[in-house]
Length: 498
Image (cartoon, rainbow, N blue to C red; front, side, top):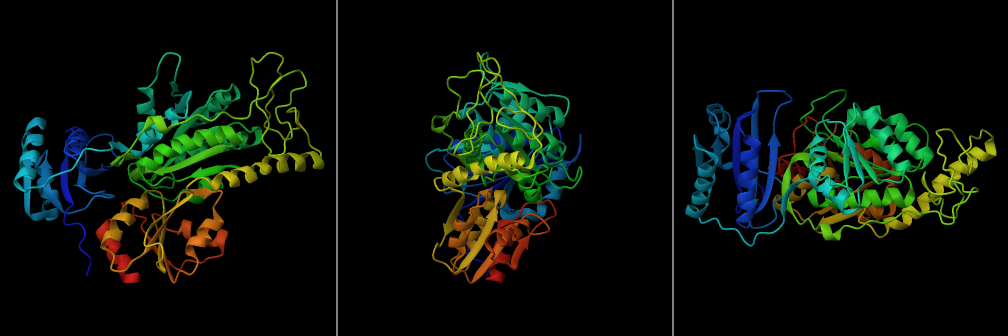
């Protein structure tokens, strides 16, 4: 028997054929609810088709924080006859159906139904935003100069959003002919001193591997947003997965430092945009922000304050002269940067192993010296980790029962926790590389039951935790059919394991 903690959460469904304006109607309803003082979560479901198919938007809302949508509907907005038939079994006993009306009348009907049912919101707060747009806003807040991308679901809306934010003398957005051009163009921009980010999905990132390694070898700052979809190959482009975790943390050939951040909601996606751009330029490493279709496209009300953003400059060279070496050895492994066009500076980057001046080397002692130099940065990255939320803990922090997760599974886990029959500690991993081993070990110390929840077949997070901490997690709840976790069903499964 589940603990009933969703009696004050209400859900509206909007369905129709592609082209009927399903998404637009859903977002307009979400904006109305937000303005009425509700906390809103919106999910979008559409098939991997160019045209046609059934599209559906689900909105769950309450006065209090709603982390995920629910299946049972209080109101169904049917933009075609098929929607009524497809979703009739999801209607609650007293549910209302709205059909055959233009958008203004749909919104008015919803307001009237809420009034009749005496469902009231609070003070309007937060912005209704998806992870892709929030990530883009974070990049802007950190001083983004260029965004380069080729359209690939589910990362494309970041490209669309930032394209609309271009200004003379400010942000520039470029769409090259393919993903290989995207990353090579971005590396050229970083070489010229421009803060650059790129966005793609797993298949696009696979094409970028040689140039991703060039970023590591040439120490060119780069931010890469990878939004996961069900794979491999073309997979299921419009549905979700968390199956690229291992691929991303081991991306590229050879060994070089990188940072991988996996936000769990829109607010964290905004912060990840800020952190990723600053960390890339501080440590001169590639930084990957790992999203997925659910996080990229689902929307929720979160606080977004552009004034909280900041731009941290990297280590810049002073008194540049003919002796300038781009890869000068320093105690922290971070060389002072200069860029082409600076008087007296000869700036070289090299895809081959090189010395301080960027000249190719092949002697064993030189090779080892440069590899050690690059990995010396890990000490500084590790020190920064102490001041960053690399993990977050929710629920009962003293509980001997722990649920551990990353990325978009945060939403269903936190919503499911409202229905758990036992007090439980909920542990979210945000930094996947470098992995914050000590913090994770500390939070799992003394746990009698650990359950890992993730959206892949192999339990990649559980195996990563075992590899980095020695803690083996035998209880896993895995979903790999490309659909999101349902909070009620997830709560039932967790309760059965507790």
